[in-house]
Length: 489
Image (cartoon, rainbow, N blue to C red; front, side):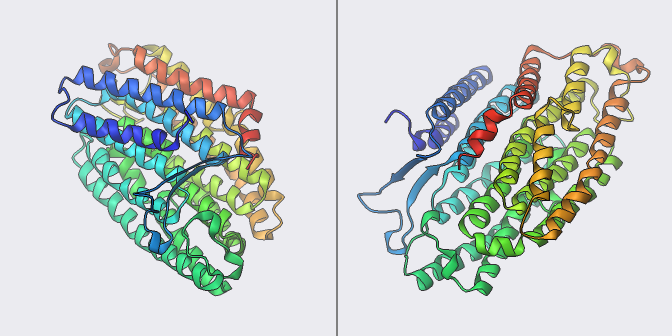
């Protein structure tokens, strides 16, 4: 078949190794254009797979080694599966990495071979996470993703970039060890309780596993995913990583990397172990409410544009978690929709932050002011993306926020989930406050003399902001194009 999951996943890995090899040119223009061309091709290939996708018949592919499974004695297979949720996140991943490759032109000034090879390696690892059909294969890609993410975060010019990268690795590694314990327990008890020696998600039967063991496994898994989501109090690595990483890396971190945590909860807890998830969902809903409220107040207190967007991302991920906790189809579709909407918004906001920093050499909203008069095109995109981020009708986040709240209010699991939704809904206005504060402080007011000669956005920057804006408007006006696919699970 001309559509291949391994080709989709491993193409970036192969190109990464090619770019890193001594045989490949060191000319930064050739490297940049080559990688950008690969990202364009990959995105078109992902769109083709989406166009041919049938939710009733997910894509499945298994790789054998000399006719054997990966670790046959343990029932571990090198199997991939793309269902509706995986398909959406795969296309989103390809799109965000394409935007990041374009944004890299003006933001990356050194070590181009290493940077672009790490970018493609991270892309391949994240695609592997979203398409793995086996628990241990999922964990393999989950750990692989740490390596390029570390180097990309440390790639920032800020002197604290390396410290932020180390903090990210420590948080992720410790969470991964707890998650691995959960995977091992699930694999063992699935075998002892059901007689099935397999690590494939489709072969897990949680109903036969003792309830106490189920809950222990569920907590271990969620601790690992909570670091990436992230859930308060395991969130402190994120603002530092965003502040110190290059702009394209920040776009990937917020647009895609955080979604791996939400996807992990969906794939392991929500889908594979629904019995234990329904037990702990009310507790998770409280954590989701804390995410939404606590980090929104912190975001309002920030003056660095990147830290504002970083804390707003944590708040939005709380909304996605709340949708998963509701445990009904409407809320799940809304959560998946919000993953896409949030990715578009954060890519746009981090791009704006990067443009402001390149022109003004600061991201402090109290030090800028009045730049709308010299950067009218950036101001126009800024208004549009900020309005989208606060949930104005006709934009994608409005649809996902409303549907998430409706799904949570209709949850039949617990009154706690409804309580969380009732309290979270009016407090979403806080997001309007800090986003409008950022917009007003940065673009309005009296223009300072040192910013009188700054240039407006370039063609590359225009393309990125236009693509993001188009996505927010299209999915805001025609949400069913995405909701119908998410609902076909």
